[in-house]
Image (cartoon, rainbow, N blue to C red; front, side):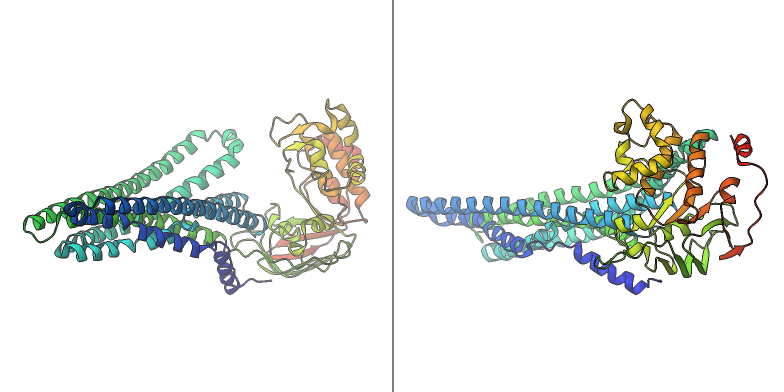
Length: 572
């Protein structure tokens, strides 16, 4: 089923809506406007004290004025505290919602068959969403409304000092021109830095995932030289960003100093000329400081806006892959193990094992040997059948239902995807066998007995309580690890089993247990397997081959006469 760009666009709109602020914006606006009004208390008090109270020696009026101003200052402090608390809560709420949404997208979205690219995209998505937090906490809204104080302050300066209001106007115009020019330069430098950092992070992830191959081929020096080049580019662009950022904040500091000095000099000249009073000059100086504060915040926000925009663009590009909306829970489909592909396509254009518009029907109980033209694993096909990815086009019908729309617990009971390198999760051996208690113990022990795990578990000092973390330091052999992952996936009794070279690298005992298990499952479950083992291949009742984008039926070759026991000796 093809997903159109229009659906992706609507999905983006839904994501942006869900990632918006949406938390008490009116409260933030009201608090900011009140704080802005209270910012004018001090210059008004100073003007009254110097021009009216001191010349008339009105001590009683001074007492009332000071008490009123103190009360208003207390209200200002309380409002600022409440506003900062609300902004912090908004940021935390956004981080929580966005983090859950991003992780859900990483887990449920179709990220393609490249695990390296998938890991890099997932890491970049979570990083981008985290960077968007400060831009969606409400601070942008607060800064925008605080800017109202600047024109109000200029109007008040004009009211009490007349021509002196031209000083902040001219200074603001000069500063705005420089800020815009520096902002454009900063945006280009920031985009270049993000591009270099993205290349470097992708390279690090690839190196970490291939570290054993790198050591085996003695390519450590080459990878280190390549990383040095990427790190050099990243450092150069980071230096450019820091230079632009520092230049912007230095200009802000210089602007505040220049504005205050200009007001003092201009006000002093007007006082000497008798055009304004001393109180008017001091009030104008205080008001000029009120102009500088919101402008400084606005510049800092303008600089960081590029960070927010780049993070939003990265998140949108990674969230473009639509996540299917699962329907309301209904009765699970009959678990017969039937599989149909209708106009099915998967894989990238440069993938020699891609499938283009293929139709296939596998009946319950079939044991199909699947081969590819390149000899590689058909991971894109298997992931789509297992419901982990969506096909590029067409449909996958598992028991007449699309597997990616099934809830995880139901899908686990319908299909099992057995891979070459089974995943061990941090926990005990029992946790890994039972999917952390999701599978019934009777089914777990039954499959474990079929795979011959009882004797191996009994030989462990801590038995089923043996701690595992999925690393090479686990106190169990690789063959036991692989069989443990098979138990975890087969315990829900799925009727469709995808076997992707899951017998590779097994020791003699583990191989025998796996082979005997699949001889039992033959005819009882639907099995699609890819393997190089001749014994496992001889179990197949159908032979399929991916070639030229098609899935073709190949005649079954008669099994060889070599005895299994003899072949095992040769194999081991």
